[in-house]
Length: 401
Image 1 (cartoon, rainbow, N blue to C red):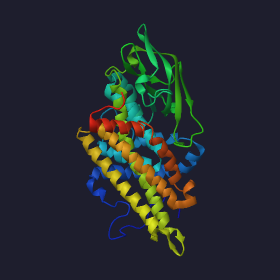
Image 2 (image 1 turned 180 degrees about the vertical axis):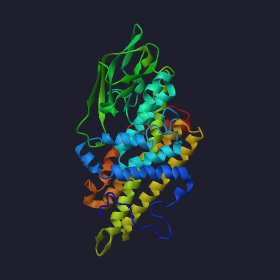
Image 3 (image 1 turned 60 degrees about the vertical axis):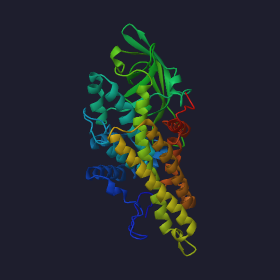
Image 4 (image 1 turned 45 degrees about the vertical axis):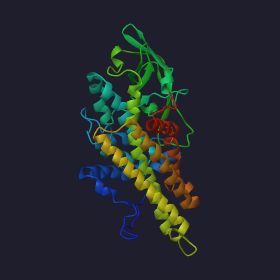
């Protein structure tokens, strides 16, 4: 049996509990939410898991899956209208969980497309911008990326150097962006740049003269994902390329909060995949005449993993319910991103130790998830930045500007 893709076959062990849903959290989900989760899981099982170890090994993103994601309604699924599915935040979170159970790179694509590229057009764009881009992006016919981070302004995006100046009725954009997911395959980029009055967002077709994307190679993490540098050299845009309904850092930061919600849900899937792999392996790996799952130290590791996965799932579900009620705060999103990612990373590391030497091969998903989570730990707000956001929330004192 290939334990890298097969679900655990036994359930209701250890006193009538399901070892893969220890707290019976699925009972808290509605039939519609369960259907969304099951649909996303089948997609991952049928289309992602059979090829992911090879894509990761070769460092390629499976672009042919994009149209299939669009056909399932996974792209921009939490947005209303313009061909978007209009699901709840919880359903979107469950889809992200299942995508990341496949691979963080697959979930990153979904997050960037829906929350970082489509969301700002949907929330701040003109009607013409929405009609032009959102239906095609929802269908997977056009790919988007989000240009905020720069080489010298990561955690401090307000110090960006990219700028746009007026030239008659046009805008002329100069600068660069770094670590941009989907950059090298994008048809449109939502780029944030300084103007004479405020930071503004621009909808930039990537075939515009003066736009260049340089893909970043030799990555040890998020290998089944495209990561790029974007360069703008006197890139001329018409006046209506600017997002008209937002100015200042509120625009990009609101997009980041959308994406961070997808992350805090998604990493539960990576953690679950690592735990399931370790549990199945421990129940079948025989040493000293019995399965290693029967040894006390291994059981401690499995219990720690199970508890972490279930707690992270409860946090994600609770925050999803708050988001659906329009009650969620940025600090609460930071809580989820801060703790769920670090818990997932600890689960991956613990699972790797259970698998021993097998844990470092791509026959099993653990080392791939572990390497991916090292990136997730620091992107879209490092662990340190989310710590300080929470510190300000509980003390009322800002430790950074």
